Image 1 (tube, one colour):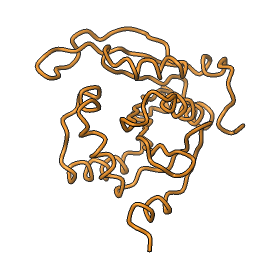
Image 2 (cartoon, one colour):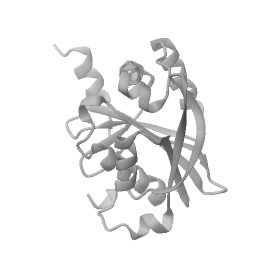
Image 3 (spheres, rainbow, N blue to C red):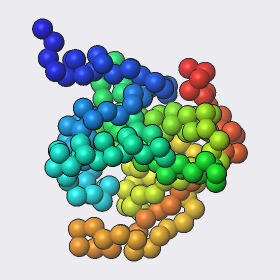
Image 4 (cartoon, helix red, strand yellow):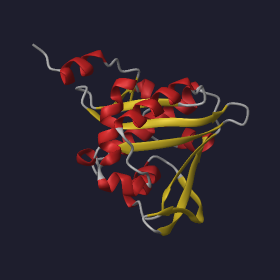
Length: 194
């Protein structure tokens, strides 16, 4: 007899892939995973988020699924192991802009999987949508995220000084972006070539 984790993984149908990761659409049933990842102290600090209750995370996923200007995915290893969440949000097709968000479970960081997921999401955004610019922002001290973004081709455009309050102190936010022309110039296989 299969346990619940085996059943939920079996039901995930990958819809996109990178070299080392695949994506499946985020589902309300993924709320427990998202809740667990967001509640981990380092993740909460790096994201600058309050850990929310499981029911609040579930409600947020339900609301986000109704938002036609965002696409949320669970990042999976090829064997179906869920390792993170990635999203393309605030999609504005008239201006050709969007923003990317990424969160990996702690045990999967530092292995290049974040960069692989970002590469795959950029291929989806620029290869399948009429986007011209993808933006990302993170705390200036979130070295792991800044490294993954730079490795995926994002360029540091500036710093929003004292942009948020977190743990009693003001934090600067780094603003990075990649343009369609920069993505086109990247010398790497595209998701559809894998």
